[in-house]
Amino acid sequence: MEIRTSRPEDLPQIEKLIVSRMDPSDGVDARLLMTDPDAGCDWVGVADDDGRIVSTLTLMDETVMLAGLDIPAGQVEQVATDTEYEGRGLVRQLMSWAHDRSAERGHLLQFVMGVPYFYRQFGYTYSIPVKQTRPLATRPEAVAGHTIRRATEADIPVLNRLQDDASTARTCAWPMARRAGAG
Image 1 (cartoon, rainbow, N blue to C red):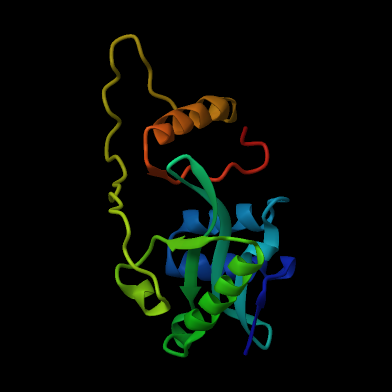
Image 2 (cartoon, rainbow, N blue to C red; image 1 turned 30 degrees about the vertical axis):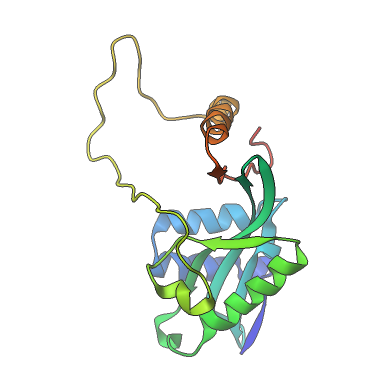
């Protein structure tokens, strides 16, 4: 078993593994991330069993704003292991891979949002409450004079400004990373 950084040819297996353990939209996220010129395969670690990708995680570069200071951080996401390989310590090894990469990248902290209590075994603890979100079952009624529509790429600058405005009033904020072309 080899723990290593992913390669472009791993993408189909990683996407399939993530979809099998999570949701189809998470597979799309993995594909977008691994093909992003600013992120790419360097952000994804894998457990490779003789050419078969059996476990994976992503370490994204982020910035946490604390009392007006930008702090470089790593966010662990998209952790998935093939059911046949559970209980073999692969996530522990991949978390070690992530912590090593995080230190190399100069991150001063790491964070993860995931299965409650699971990540405590890797030294993580709860620091702030995270509100759960639920998908809308029905479209809300529009306020008079306004319409509801899907956001488009043209909306990204306005959405970024709204994110920045909301973050400014906070002592601690985690503005979502701005990927290439995101304004």
